[in-house]
Image (cartoon, rainbow, N blue to C red):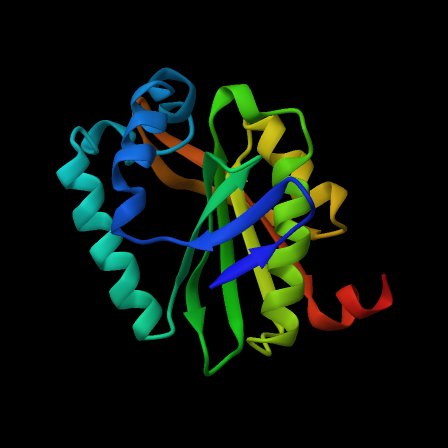
Length: 180
């Protein structure tokens, strides 16, 4: 599946052909990414990413997860995904990351806007959540800019490299989205 975000940005369903490019992007951005993403140090080879991609493809087949690579001017810039889809309750979480050189260009905001539309229309979800570390100010700007409701803090909600960190929980309901 491909979602055309705008003339410069496309979201493409992840597949094994992306493994080397994702590895190279992560490998060249390890210090930047591992601040907020607990999995970075565990992904040390292209084979690690191939295994991860196999898991992503399986979860997509099960309709519990949709993983995309972000292409900016046809170059892999990061990842975005619809995670932990609960079809019974029509809830999912969004997760995203970018290489350092791609930040500050509105890429994630535009990608989230397209993914949100896809979630509420094609997937018929009712609620989307975004969780991010309290100290991750760049990531927090995304749900705040997109009119998500800040529900509160999940104390010590994620184990990062240096210990547990508090997580902010944001949500957007379909009815909120329809009003905008």
